[in-house]
Length: 265
Image 1 (spheres, rainbow, N blue to C red):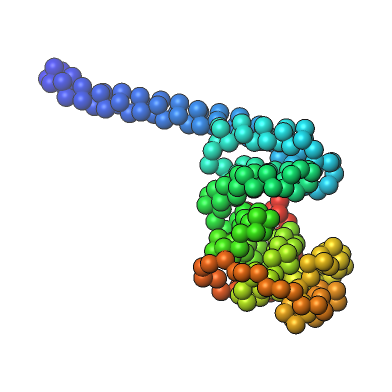
Image 2 (cartoon, rainbow, N blue to C red):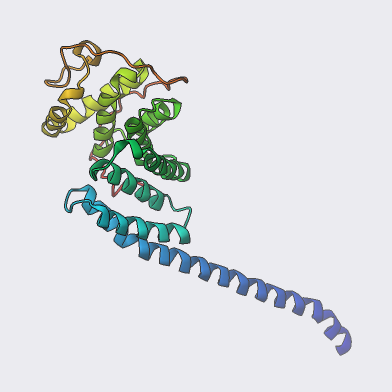
């Protein structure tokens, strides 16, 4: 009887042993992943803090600062390659480097493409994150690429972040500078963001419009009754990129409080 019981217990013992080994492997994998993510987070914290200070104008962005930001984010992405925040930060760093550090603009296109690569990756990993889409708009505007991707990103940025102040500013700036190349659906998206920005913070919007005075669209085309928003002189049209433009997003109602970029997920 005991021999039979012992023989019958062996398969159960083997199963328990295999389960224990599988659990140990799983725990080891989890510990390894946690170590990767922790090290990536450690590397990114200083880099993103430095980037934020530079973007806010608290410190000047120069080659040394940019190299510190980039190097930290490169390491973070090596350890956590599918983190959308790291890709967003890397793209922002390249865009900031290109727009604020003097250099030969004719040689900068490859760096804009690097920024675009990271913006597209961030958008793929977090499709409803409006800042990745807005980054695509800004980078392509600098390159003069008013294609299907530009128009799609413009629509998505406005759709997912209609009351984000930074999104409004980015789209207004990009929209004014590329106005002649836009179709009517894209122009209506720009009008909507301009109206919302002026409704929520008229003073800041007036300051932004003053800085964009040279790029202001003709009044008969902008069709927004905001002082200083348009130019009386007509401008020549640019050729619009090939592709079907997305439908304009309807203007949403304002929320109880404007969410900040830091709080948005």
